[in-house]
Length: 492
Image (cartoon, rainbow, N blue to C red):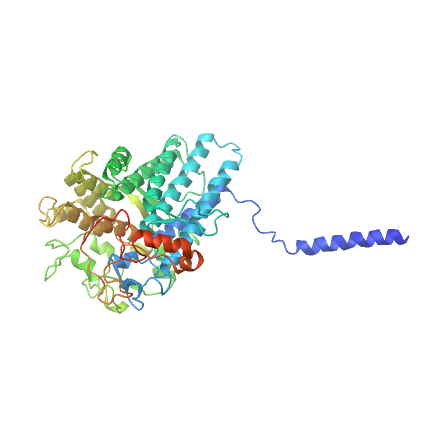
């Protein structure tokens, strides 16, 4: 009898323990996460990061002098440590974007097809890879040498920094592989793709986008390795966007899929930015004439970029504090919760093709024709008319044959005007072409007396990966915002 009581007691003891342990289990947690879900979350995080205007995340819109700060001008004066914007950006790109994209590919490779065609699964894997290349290219374009081959490997808690040029060329190879496994007559993610959708038409857009990204990356290397760049650009050019094409993040009015600029400008309740006088002066006739662009006919995009104050456009002072109520603001059409954000489009590829022609690459057409196509398409996208575009482009300071300067200046100025609120794209174009000649903040900080040409490595790298950080810093010529990266060969 005693034995029976003992056995029953032990049974109830273990049963009670089991029930207590069950209390620690969150029954609402996902036990399995699909590859599609991982991809969708990472893609949203990536585009939010690239489109953000938050001073703690992305300051390229102020560096490119499209926006000026109000109360907190420190980041527009090139302070990268106060709010750790460079560290926050890197942390997000590695931890929330690239790790999840890597996991998405891993899960997709193990998920049963369950009615999904193998060609469709290949398309899904290719889409994940294209977004991974986009994320990695941004990292290399910001910092240069970075942990890559040993990144995300638990065996390497202190990963080495790989050579930036080697990484960049490997990314282009990865892009070629992704393009090669895609089937344009089959869809991709049946749900959860807020960029191009899951249909076969969406796959065609992904393929065009991959080629357009390849075109951009090839031209980024044109001054460093012209022969290699020529091969990449000429292979990509026939397959890029045509008129009307664009790849965008399609946002909605519902949380959490709202436009990042809606979150920064509207729902946050903050009044951190006004439009700069640099941009406004370059888009309308001014007296005295602006030293970036002199116009007799106003740029028809200006009403879509900025609001007026008292019926006129009043730009804030770049790199200084400004009273929010005193200056023109970003037009509210750009801060709607469901406003799309351009990842890449026909406008950008036409500017890139104009550049490629001037570099002597065989991409078809003339530089002037591509340049005109880009400006006209930009004006039409923003809401201008064909007549307005023609009148604007007929001005001697805009027409390709008469505009001031060399081809880099002509293309660089117009690309700068077109890439409004696309800070990283504008920053890349400006660093590669060296135009327009942007003046630094008169109140610069930390000895950075010119517009930054790279992000400094985050403090976390100095403390957690010091030996590799030190070696990498020495190799690139110093961890400084004015140290030019491997592809940036300008000397001014």
